[in-house]
Length: 334
Image (cartoon, rainbow, N blue to C red; front, side, top):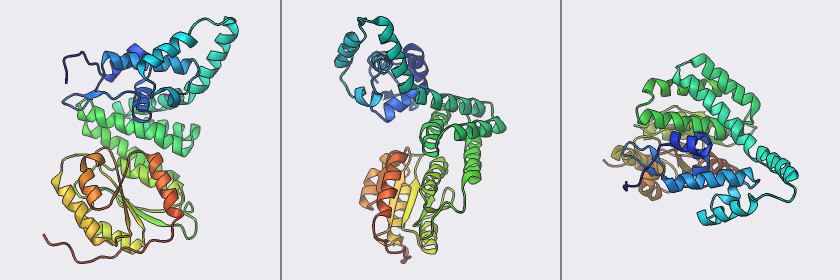
């Protein structure tokens, strides 16, 4: 990291007026900034990053969609703010219109952030009942895709980062995992999958013990009408292949979160590909998936960055002819 002053996300939130949740969304979804990382993998922002977030907030307050301005150069943002932020001929009318547009553009993000913060507060206190109530309130207020993408995914990322830097403990992550698993089991209906719906298996490979991403993938697929077989975390390649064969599944979705440098995982992925029919699709997502891009490319697996891409891929797969079923050839030579 260079010698320029760098600031953690809570300082950036205080100086820009944006919540940490909105900062992460603008960063991950829209590429507004690319922060550096500390040796403990914390996001660290420069003065230029803070100025950029401030300008983007002002542009959104003026009525611009974040998706339209996030990629503009900083100088162009300054010009935009200087031009459109100047007093209008009818300041009262302009003020009302800008307030309305700002409310329309920021209300969903603000609402989502409230739910994230409520859930996070319950996690910090290790209050399981309040966490379940907070998730339930979000489920009532939001559609399932929005609940997953805008509340549960940011919450998982936040808890994971706080765990990595030592602010939260493993027990906090376990509490969140139990709450989300319990919530999914209550909303999942045996009738969700339509007759003739395709099957898929969802799990994490051997050595991957963090299952939250896999649970959300299962919830996403179930909501789209897939017959999902969720197997929990840390499953050997031969067991994953057996589940695909038993269930006549056409896709296996894997979540890879931590660590991002496990040589045994590469071995497991190669074994899995060997066990499966070549037409069986392997989809891999999760925070650490990019770190294994070489072996994933080698075995023909698809990397998914966000759940929206996962939905799009599943929708496309359902329009294709049925894939051949999985087979179980002899294990590869050691």
